[in-house]
Amino acid sequence: MNEPKIHLENIHPSAPQPPKRKKKEKKIKNNEISSRGIPFKKRFFQNTLTVFFYGLFGVFLFTNIMVLGRLDTIVSVANEKAIDPEKLLVEMKAGEAASDMVTYEGEQWLALYFTSPVNTEAAVTQRKEKLESQVAEGVRIDGVEGQTDGVQQHVQKVSYIHQEVAGKQGKDILYRTLYEVVMTENKQTKKLQVALYGVYKEGQLVIVQLPEYLNMTKSTTPSRAVQNPENYFVKDGNAIEDGKEKSNIESFIQKYLELYCKNDANLYLVSAVKGLDQATLEGATIDQLVKKGDAVRVQGTYTFSYTKGAPHTSYFSLEMRQNKDSYFVEKMNE
Image (cartoon, rainbow, N blue to C red):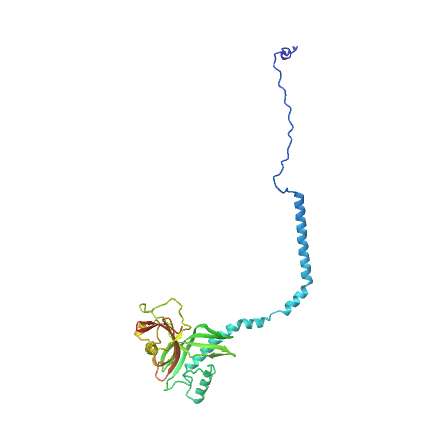
């Protein structure tokens, strides 16, 4: 038999009261107010993007319709302004063709010039006419009638070295073309470097200046080969009128050209260039003497020969400066 339980806490007044359960407080979720100046509204943003893309699509569609609608007009205008490819090709290659033809015809002219004609009157006349047909009026070049004293020349090879534009006059371009010529003169082989000045007019080369005979090999003498880095090329200046100074320059030029033609061992004392080698000076003419500061520019012609009776006439230009009681040539034919 189970005995009944007696709960004393309900009888004794000093018994501790059972703890009361606290009621759970309902948490009220407070919506935080955004601190941004412009509140973000998702639906408005979506609507804006929709309008933007629809508008972009409409512009694209309108543009295509306009282009397709005017396509015939565009094609017709393009056909009217179409460039003839053959004409364009001719224009693009006109400049290149001119320089190439100057180079080629210069080679042919030099090959004929350094080859003695057959000893018949008809051959001599034909050679002279051919050579003179490509020389400008007023320019006289020795040797077009062939060499005298029975000297026989025969060209072995003419090689192109370099070409540059030396000047322009209207549409005419002046080319300076440098060649190397290997020839025999009375069975002795000679190697020359010759520069031709020419323009291309009416389908052919026209030589407008006497050929330049030069030696492109640089002087290797370091003690006297003065190199001035400044570009003091004298384009203008005062003509030298003083009789004493002019006489001194002419005397120096005569001695200098004698050394230059022989390529004398003492050439380095008065020049930074190298001579022709084993040639003899026959005469020189000075056409222009100009002075600017201490620089003197000389232009003229000189005649030389490797073999007696076979002269060659060359144009020359010098740039020199006074060196105590004499002069020093720093550039020639540059």
